[in-house]
Image (cartoon, rainbow, N blue to C red; front, side, top):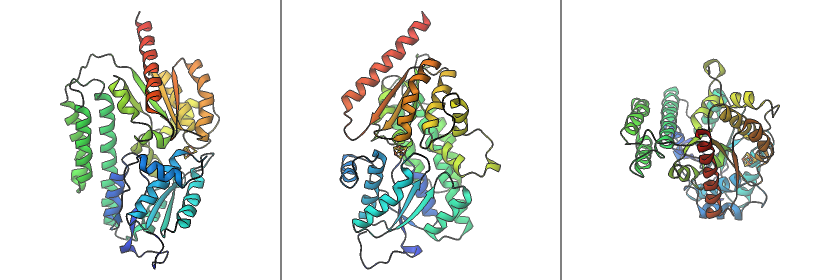
Length: 378
Ligand code: SF4
């Protein structure tokens, strides 16, 4: 919405909320925000058009996620959004500066909007509830209960479907069946509006994937997909690497799953009893890094060590060009790979990345892993 007669504040009933695209977070977040009585605008999925808008309105050296996030905001504001949710985090990651930078750019472009910031490493449930109250002005506890129940159950269902897709795709007998099943369930999850229905989704998804015929005896290499949060979750940016690997006959295990991460970030520690991904990473990375430096640097190192100790065949590390935490990780990874005896491929992505060269490097890496497996067997 460009500058017009509206003030900077919007009445609760006029709230039209948008947030950046990241994986399928739009499905659970939409359910939550609608339950709190606000309207939602979902920007189109990332594409060449979005990238072009982001690049045109950003400084050159800024990392790719910022450019796409900015494009998401612009596209959402053009579709009538008036309230933007922003996420920020500390450390050498530049996400901490995104909020002010994006806000200034959008104001200079003439857009009029409210902005609500979620500081992901300070936010616990109470702060998150406050932020949602600020966005929606909803004071009905039932709506919060309904919204969070729907949101979390949908999130768990989507992550379950993704994990099953990663497992089934390289083993399926009829090409494309796992993907069809996954897409079908995404639609069902999105259209489920009752808490009872949402709670049943996970079991139904597991049962449905079990009906897909697979070759259980097929020797399938297992690869951890690790690196920067945004590129791991955005199929446009990572050029659909999970699908490419699955079709090459590789089982992908992505180490960042939204439900794990959000549960850890939001749940009060009193109710969070397992070891979080971050805690596991700190434990496994301690020989190489003393502390987290922002972004997913420590997860990248910790996941690599963990993978080597748990029979994983290789690591594909992806990061956006100029991402500071992942540059640090990339410089430590050769030592980790050598010491822990696990092959690592690092891929840096930016708006110039060509598909052919990217796929060729992945194929060569998978050949190497398969050869290593054969050597072990002989
Ligand atoms: S982790 Fe890297 S790419 Fe992601 S926001 Fe931070 S600096 Fe940018």
